[in-house]
Image 1 (cartoon, rainbow, N blue to C red):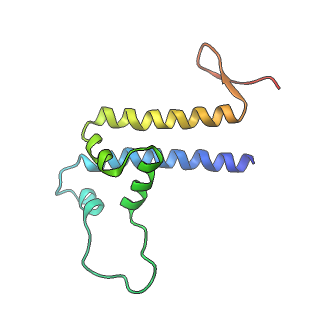
Image 2: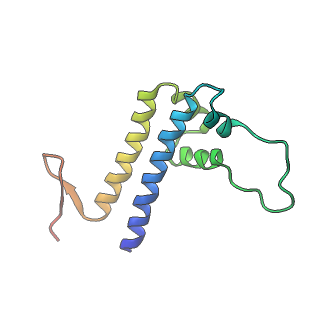
Length: 117
């Protein structure tokens, strides 16, 4: 059970960092390579194998996890402070949910301590 919790923590951290980087790349000049790689596409086909998941597809899933459609997220990221605040609130909510689930509670100084059992 504890391994599952650690795995969720790591996944949440990675999602948060991916979303922050998405905001960074989206605000870049359109002629920068990271921007081109994020929003560009090729005309070539992959063949008959299953389509590979693109980075923007993963970002779309991350945005849905925080409850924001990718189109709205693309608009919000233009304001860096608003985007960081949005992602930060989601990360704090995820951390709080995990801490409550694992028996931690906050005291007045906002430090987490193990709740008595």
